[in-house]
Length: 413
Image 1 (tube, rainbow, N blue to C red):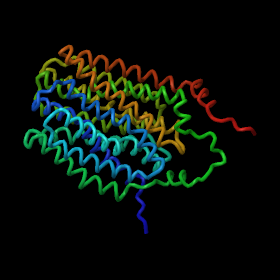
Image 2 (image 1 turned 120 degrees about the vertical axis):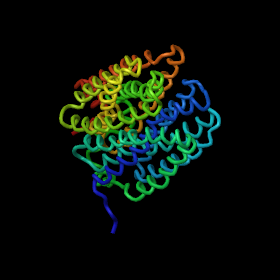
Image 3 (image 1 turned 180 degrees about the vertical axis):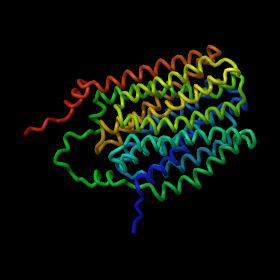
Image 4 (image 1 turned 30 degrees about the vertical axis):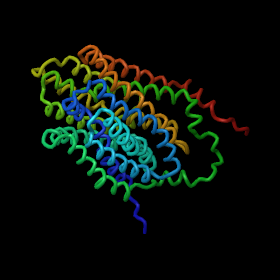
């Protein structure tokens, strides 16, 4: 008899797998400092690897969405685990910048994309019909726990064993632990099976397809909002450890602070998932942006190790806001565009995360190289986060939704 997991068991396993892969992805700032110390590359060129990871994610997300509409999540995530494990194993042999770009920036990035946000939002949407934002928030909270554990663990491995062994260790964890979990328990949820079992619905003309979504004003407003949010967030995520080290803190202290921001982000994902279900998603998003800006402001005015209280302000406010925006974005996308083509639409929308994240990561390093300070980079982060909030509210204007409804074929009665 075929074993059928419960929705919350699936969500818990997704919490673990997404938590590890995205936690590793978001902990690049720790490896970033170690690679700078080893090879002496410029900050802009080295941060460009993270931009490449996000670019690969942007390019492949539509493909992942397309595959999800045709195959099950298990095949997608298991393939991603294999690619991620291989990329991390090869990364231990890095001796030049181009190898870092190929092994981590390309091969590992494929694995990160195939085990990332798109397949897990799709999976949760198949298992949950109500309280979807809360379930997505819980799964996304795994990223924060992953950061909490992996940022200081990475620094400990780097300090005691070196970065090659750290890459090798993480490769083994993916292959031995994550791959079997996905292979055994990931399967179509009851709502996904119902959707796929329908041959032709009698009222299918008013269902979103990827082609219609790409003509939708709501889609493009959410898309631009995600570009702004991703670029504003990634500037901080990529360069926060380097900035705190520049201020005068130890590398381990900086990595630990990043880890604490990870756990507060887990709290934020759960809380904002609940808030988004309780209030409007637009109101939840505005509150999220305001809290994030307070955190960015605290980091901007941090000048020396005597101002430790600013780090705690940063940890609480930026941490709670960090990543929980994705919960609201995913829930909004599912609410508007759910249907037969949801996987493809979700994949296309996630391109914005890669585009914005790549720009933010690279520009943060480039502005530092030009000015010798992160002040300009962090100020731009706050600006684009504000622009993201404006786009979210514009997408909720009734006239925008009414305009998009005219995209559907008109059925004669």
